[in-house]
Image 1: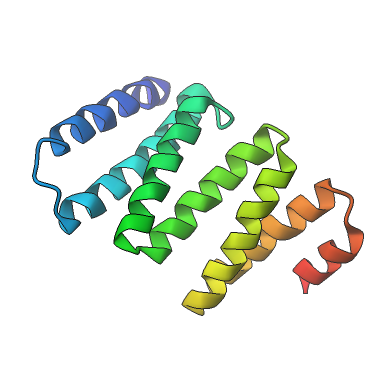
Image 2 (image 1 turned 135 degrees about the vertical axis):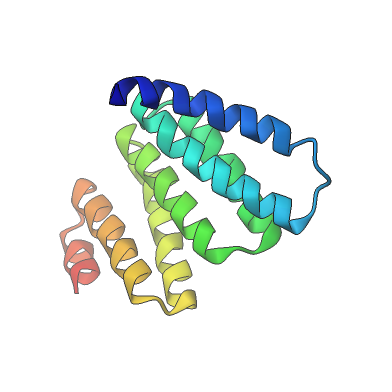
Length: 140
């Protein structure tokens, strides 16, 4: 039953996004779309797998929206998702660029939780790239 719900969730999110698109483009609607795109990305991971183009497209759209409305916290979450898409594809340099951006966003927000997540992404990627000194620095 749980697997069936996972398969149905993306269709429900996509239908909701379609309906949302009929509303005037206000900041509130854009914020709702960001939340729905992020949720859709998470649902698609369970159905299509994290490395799929559908997951990437969903997170890229959410990132564009975040940049348009200036929502740094949501941008962090979306870029975290994209970082993992590229890690799953072994596109380590693309993932590294995103991880570097996560550190900047976390520092700008002065959020210890986000900073921990950003360092976690950074040390993981540096480890995969064989950059031992950077792994130590990201772990501090």
